[in-house]
Length: 496
Image (cartoon, rainbow, N blue to C red):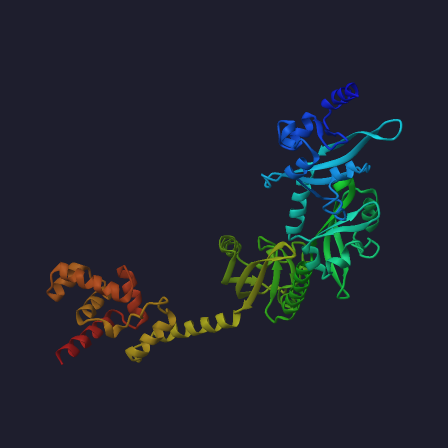
C-alpha cells in the first residue's frame, strides 16, 4: 500500500495541475508543488494536517454552482465519494482575505477490488488570470456608456446587455436577456443584412453598417451597428454588438435639407441679381431669375457667364484680391456688362459659403447706374454754376462745394468763414500767384510769420500744397480778385 502511495506521489509531483491526496481517515497526506503554489503556501503543513484544518485555513466560494449549499464543501463532496468536475471556486486564506485565487476543481476517487475507497484526490487548475480578464471585461462592459449587447452564436440568444443599450432602446434588462435574435432583430433594414446575418451565424466580424431597431415605444431607432466575435467563460463563441445612435445625425440631416430648401427658395425669389460663383469668383454655377434677366445665365456663353461681366479687367483683379484676402467683399463699385452688351454701374457684394461640402462664392449685385447718372448730372450742374458764382452768397457757394467734394468720414468740413483775416490775406496772395517773400513784403510781415500762417491755412482746409489751395478757393468761387475782395471783407469785419 505504501509502495502504491509512493508511486502515486511520483506521478503527480511533476504535473502542472495541483493535486492534494487525502486519506480515508481525512488526513492530508500529500500535495504537489503546483497545489501548494495555488494556495500561496510553501509546505504541506500550511495547508493543514487534516480536512478540518484545511477547511478552517481556506475559505472556498463557488462561482459557477450557486445552487450548492455552504455545507457542500468540495472536500466534503470528495469524502462522500461524489464524482464531480469543473467546479469553479474562489479560494482565499482566512488570515489574508484580500488575496484570492480561482480554482477549477475535479474529484478523483480510487477503490480496491471490492469497491472500497483506497485514495481520495482533489485535482485543480489555477484559472485566476482568465477570471480576472473576464471580470475586467464585465466591469468594462457594464461601465461602457456606448450601447452593447452579447449574443451567443450557438443559439443566437442574448446573454449580456449593458445599460447603454437599455437607455438607447427603452428595453428593460429582463426583456432582453434570454431572448433570441429572431425576437429582437438588431439588423433590421441593415444596408447589407444578408451578409451581416451570414457572418453572425458563422461567428465572423460584422462590419459596421446602418440599421433600424424596433424599440418598445412602437417607433424606430436608426443606429450604426457592428459585430465583433468574442469568447465567453467556458469557451462559448459569442458576438459582441456595439451601437452608435444616428438620431442626432438624422435630425441634423433633416435640418440641413430644410435649410438648403429655404436658401434655394430665397435665392430664386430674391429681386436682387444673385449668383453662386466658383471659389475664385469667376465662373457662375447657378444664378437666380433676376441675375439671368439682367446679365444672362451660365449657359449663355462658353465661359459660364462670370468672366464676361467685367468691363474693366483691372477692377476684376482688384475684386478677386479683396475676396481672397478677406473672404468677402461689401459694396465693391464696378462697371459690369449686361446680356445686351450695355455697361452699367454696380455695387458688388460677395461672401464665401459652403454648400454640400463644396466651396462657392455667393454674389449679389445692385445696379446703381441711375444713381450715378443723377450724381454726375448734379456735379455737372454745380460746376456750371460755379463757373460764374459772383451772384451767389458765400454760404451757398460753400454748400455747393461740399456737395461736390464731401469731407472724409469723421472730419469736419473746411469753411471759408472759419479762416482768420490773416489767412484770408494769404489765400488772396496765393490765388494771385504770389510767392511767400512777396506776400510777406505786401503784408509787412516776416517770412517765418507768413509760413506759420500758411501752415495753419493748409491744416484748416485739409491740403498740403499751394496748387490745392488754389483749387479749394476756386471751388468756392474765390479767384484772384474774388480772393482779394474776400480778404478786404475780412479786414472790414475785423475793424468793426
